Image (cartoon, rainbow, N blue to C red; front, side, top):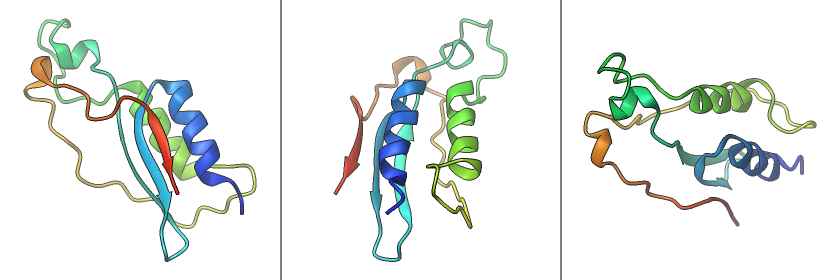
Length: 102
């Protein structure tokens, strides 16, 4: 293998993200991640840009699509089901760490 899940976990932890990833029967990697609330989401920026993603989420998505593990070949990168942050002040994190599911 190319250790994509191992490097994904390390990158997620570096960025302070939580969630999971796993291999699929099709030979792809699937996962879910979440990020800590940014100042924009918590409203401490005077209410501007309340739907912006954190820089960590953007950096992680770029890393997944462009870099990955050193020996990986990324043919396609898709993200779906972005959760709304409209009630972010009361939002709790679904995961407490980033895990590789085997």
